[in-house]
Length: 151
Image (cartoon, rainbow, N blue to C red; front, side, top):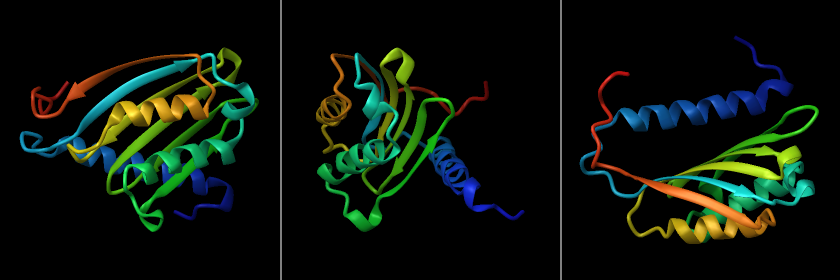
């Protein structure tokens, strides 16, 4: 199948999701790190609509965790009339983001592959980058749940 230039962000996003799906199927009993699910509210609408600023914020989060710039892969897809979805992959972790500018909100899924990562600092940094006034998050611990069963 030939992908046109306009479909490149979608192709990258699908590739990122496929990688995360494969990771989810692995035996997780010895995997360090974890997953955080978060929502941020009261965000700056101009930031939530700007693909360049969103990508920069996601990339900055990965670099602060120790990823080298060459290892960070990102794609951001802009919806019309508004909203963005972005995926950031690195050897340190992955961040998926979906924005709702009309609600001044964003949803984040943060995956970390190492136990020495401070997810709360990443979340706080992203909340600051988006001008959030409120954040809500919870952690899913890896290796403590039976996730290999079929749903």
